[in-house]
Image (cartoon, rainbow, N blue to C red; front, side, top):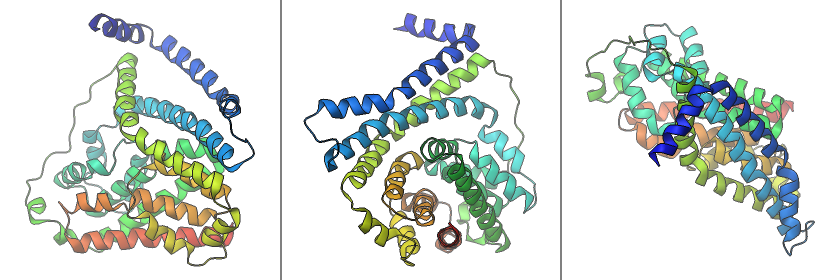
Length: 348
């Protein structure tokens, strides 16, 4: 076992460019076989392809490997990129900067940093200790789980670049504005006492050069950790999306989440908050909802609330924030998401 591991590592360490080239070719070949493979699987089963069950199964057989392939590729690449953006470097880039431009930088860094709600507390404490302003910290914490590389890549793969860019712009806007508002409210007193009393630390970090092979190893580790953690959510999300795709009538979904239902956006946000999933799990559901006639603004509002306002994240943040600040955070972010939903339902 050790011999195989060493041999595997030595190959991508010795020939990293060749390894990346071959991996990209294999990935493309697999990706291009997804549609015929899913149709062949359904054809081999005793079901009517044009029926509800046949449509649901084809959706599941196609979207499951598609999402996993896209997720593995983007997590691997971003695992390499993220070797440049450690928590220490991120804190150093944000520390000592004023509001406004710092909120923009913090939200932008959230796109390329591999942090989620589970790491909210240690990141929050580290940012506060390094002197990062509270509003700037929130811009980062909103952006990192909501506008990350996984969400953007899956949106691009399923809906195209226009929807992916739309989501990027909307997510960054919510993160920047919400963080700026929280910063202007001067709510540092709403941090838990033990957080405010912690000694300040230096935001300096030591730069260490890494070889391409080491960055590839970082990509392997990212795939192992992130894909290994989210694949159950992906299966559940795709299964729900398949049921919606195969069995929910278009007329029902259009009346429930269509443009004509003014209450659809706030209802979508309320429905999204208690859910605990990530972009990889919710995007297949979004795909099925849109295919059934749900309005884009409503669906985007639902997706953003699931990712940015999840109840488990609020419970985690309660360790470092008082209830008043958590309520303010939820109200400001929810207001931004509602505005996004209403505007795009009116415009598109």
